[in-house]
Image (cartoon, rainbow, N blue to C red; front, top):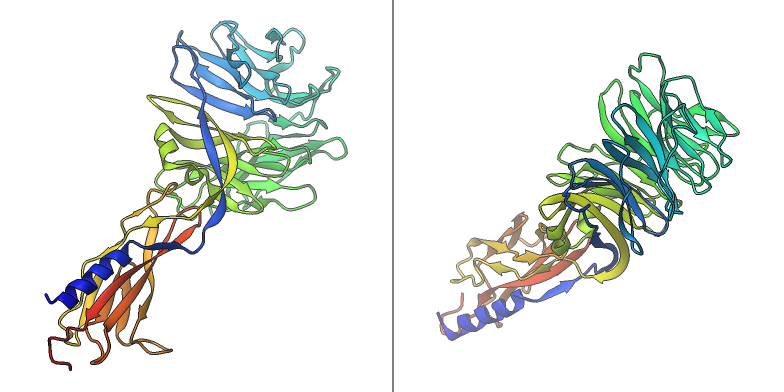
Length: 460
């Protein structure tokens, strides 16, 4: 190889490591905080997060039984105990009051665990109630009775059955508006439908997205309901929905890379109308967040790869008005709970240090040579960013129109002609490699292939 060829190879090597992000962006990402397990346990499931970032849920304790718990940054983890066999938390308000069910040897007991107070069995006060699913900031509750009828209570404790159909109230807001599920017949056969109960309209069947069935799992302070719907004549997979008062049910869409083709279910909604839940994602189940600004996003890719090695989240169960999310996933050797706190940061996207298998095309015999690029790409959030050659600049190419000396065959391969002008320093092909991650951020790296001018040889 002549000195000129070696010099051009060195230039190509140096340029191959030069990256210029073209779509650097401010992205919303999350700090992941794994919450502790109950002593002696290794399994925890969250059910709610309130405005203060407190979390409620249920987990397995040292006795092998399920215990309801409450966690806060100030008080840490509180085991809410059990009356007999086990207990489970179903809801929590912004005051930190938790409601749920505890089972003794014979019966379930609805309970309330006030913040700073004593866990109280509500069976004597409300003998009609089988399960309490939620509590509002002013103390209203909802759930279902022993007859499987949805109910609500008022701040003064007044009990009200909402329907005589098989049904349950899932969530209640501080206006006493309830979202839940109702069956149309006594046998509880399909289809079941989502409902919303308000003082002005009573209980309203919210219908479905595509026929089939639906269920409401959340309601915010503006009476916007979230849930899921599926089935119907075309057997549509489960879809997450949001429904604003006076508007049709809105399909929140799917992730483009879901392994089932899209099967999301919504679990919670905040005051802004942001919805979280779980869906099929890239090779596994994953938590999603839906906002009006961004649509549906996979929360896993808004958490650093390093954090995902500590907590592998797969579902999101609650979101508060600050955008904090409570999720579940594998933590160490157990399955636990994590709190996700959002923050904004600048991010330049994937970092590529590409190399080519033919950095120097020689001799210049006019043949088309296949050149393949190995991107050597890393990304702080996406372990598998997608790279492709998007453009090639020929230093001796035509000013406009197609270049007969360049043909991009595949994502990472291109055919280049081994030729150059008889005068001049030689030809360069600058390959533009674009790499994009699942945050939607793209970076561009240039890698250079040369056709050197060896002045020791005769010129064609």
